[in-house]
Length: 403
Image (cartoon, rainbow, N blue to C red; front, side, top):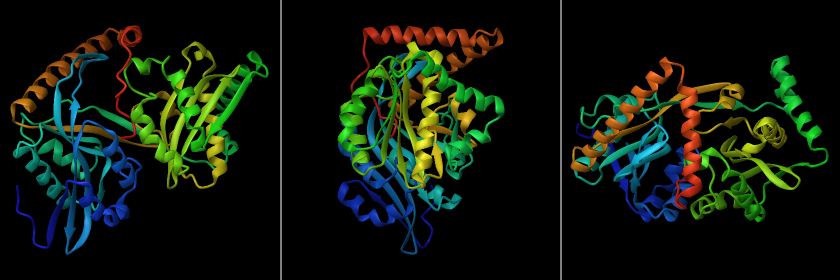
């Protein structure tokens, strides 16, 4: 570790009072809803696994320049073979939230933050450091993938494509931007649905916090039927989800879009506005109605509403990959969640088990690809996950995708 250069100070906030002292600097840098200070504080008060906050501020010549938004928490570090969870040892993690590296992220400032991260591990305060979905072209990504030693390094980071879409002026402009074939297909989907269910289809937008109970209940009735529920991802009407989304709704930034057939909820999109960006949080549809492609129909309806607001410039498709994201998105970048493991027993154990499980899985995937069996195997794995989920429902405490 290098000495702190002249003119710099490092301030760490480890309680709410110290965080509030950083509020002005933080609010001047925040750019994403997950790393918004009020959202961060709400999550701290909601999650029972959080041990304490840990936020690092870099000050240069008495001016705040860089911020790292994190928390120390106990996490179940799921070790999986594909969709199958092998084990889930508990680890003490210093987690940097998504979008939590703020301000001037030059090489010099990232190096200062990295040294502060390492102090936590060297002092045996954490088993690992987790940096959620770093841009692979960022200075911090370069640091955390090159500086750790072989026993601490993340050897199996998974890279994903993050997609965004420039919001069109109107849904008519959006349709005109599609190819003739694609435009016909989009318009045909709704006609087929209406033909098969005449006067039975309703589209409803929920925008008021007084409608939250209805929104949550109807989204849950759909989400519990999806294969994502078997994987314990996506929407879940849990206490934590309500605690996280309710303040967003009270500010008027949460929007829920639904399709009802015969008054039964069949598909939904849920997202939040943050400045001029609308971020998609959750989606789901009744798999029994797969042939209608309800998610696509509702996406166009949602886009029409967002265009009418007049202040949405970007639509962020959130984490993970799906065909609709590359179909509708017009710009993207690569991200990866990176871990740095401590050299203590807990950190070494987790990293070793992770290398064995992920390494074995990737070898299997390579063989399945070679014999053109990967898609078939994935469908089979998902069906088994769904069947198991019906016997053993997911934990009420599953993590919110926006926290």
